[in-house]
Length: 320
Image 1 (cartoon, one colour):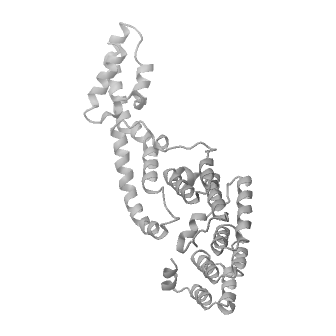
Image 2: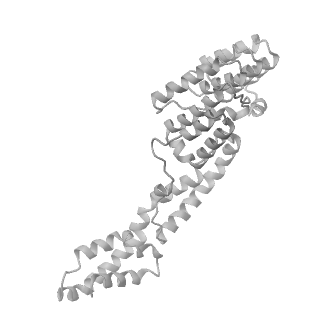
Image 3: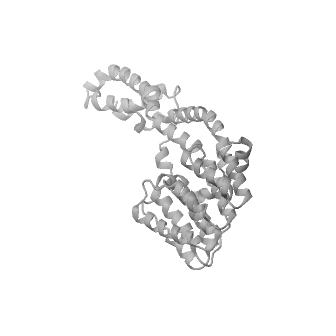
């Protein structure tokens, strides 16, 4: 009996108890060891050893089917569960909806993991979760989006850029420099003299959030240059977008103080709203809000600051 015949007999003896995962020899680590180390190379030693090898082989393939292979796919099942339930959050546009989904995601996590793990344990799913995820090159070319914008087709360029980001959400979220490069294209579009963006309200500012940690300094320098241009713009929407990015960095208080000097009351109101949603517990911010609540020239801005300072739950829900 040659090695392939012996191996097939061993697999057939337990395949009714386990799915087709062990039909792939890549999934039979113990059996492969038995075949490589315990099966004699020639007759008659192979025939003499056959009862012993068969018995050990059955134990090995059983271990492969019920212990070793299931253990090796735990990380793949965890990655699948993460990709299915804990990736692709659209915090930029659906913050409240995503927050509401968190308990459901948590509840389905063990169910998803168990089902995926059992499926991978029983069936030959060779493509791991990491390989299944669509990858992007480190220096992915984004010039086509910038070229469309430079041609004056700003809305189309931004639409194409958003589609690209949605299609590669996981890769974008895992690469801070890539995400910053995408934000830089958005900022350059918004800074154009022939483009007048609407003021992003509610959580719309999240579309311009930039996490500076891990970003290529050269990219960050370009972003800062665009932000300075936008803060000096006559367009209040552009100024507000620049402040929004600043609120996502380390200099929140300095950004807030600059925003509160803006001549447009809508911009000042949105600045109070922004810090109210994310920094209302910071003492320096609260001190600055106290000054706004008593001294701003616009009543709606003063009222917004008071609502944040009073920790009014109904008011904070209204801000969202």
